[in-house]
Length: 348
Image (cartoon, rainbow, N blue to C red; front, side):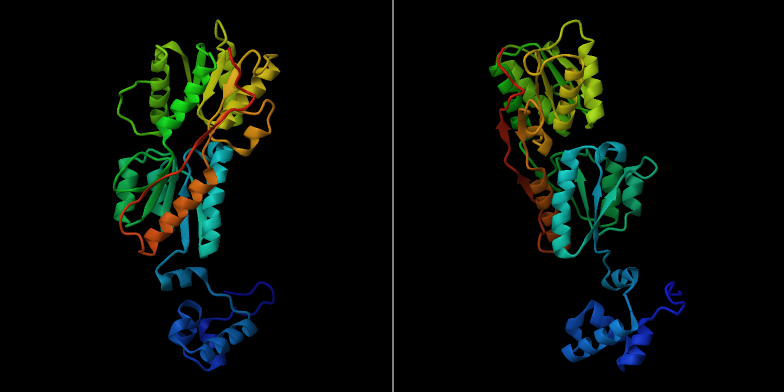
């Protein structure tokens, strides 16, 4: 391979060995396992490499180490949705902070040709973190076949797989209970796209666990899910606006909209304001996540605080402990959540 800067051939390990007087094996140790040679030898080899302008080929180095020095993050939705959700971005930031400390890179993995299993099969990573996905059997099969460790954030309960979650059902119960305690009975729920409204149907998705919480809270006051309006939405501002548009076509407006995502709640607030509907005077809105924008929008959003970046950090630390062999058993971490009452929810 030619150096495009000066037309000269790029230096190789063989060149460094010849110039430094050490073997190619010693040169390899200097970059990949310096404890196996003397400090003097390593210093001389590195000085020679710097003088020649040598930069190790990362693919060759990773092959020598039998690691990619990279972990993957499986997007919970298609790219056009996932990266528009601030909650997802905060989780990624938490993962990235840990990667930076341990010297790993982070690869964002969307579905490949609409297939997550194919994406996992082709991912050049040492481990994976999933977010909110109800992992299909074919994906798990690929990960097990590749002996690829993985950690689930906001994923289904699985005793054999390490995970980081909040108490989803309890958090949703508290969210809905706050709405009911403020006197609201005409309610619309905007759930995540994977939601099922059939209570008792077996599903461990985040949406289903939150729906169980809503059901419990409604039952406390003699209502059920059949007594409220129910919609689903992707987690983007625009999808929140579209869901609000559907609510505005109802014969009578609900007094409160309960969402499973702050960015969707914010989209609703924007759409209601554009339609001349006052928030919260005419319609209250509550969210879930406590993204940064939740406290800056007017009115400030009542929401469930779940620390997204901390989830990312814990997920990454857990994955690295599995990769380096210090964690043998699966661990299940539960992060604390809080109900934050703000101006977007008022009494009826």
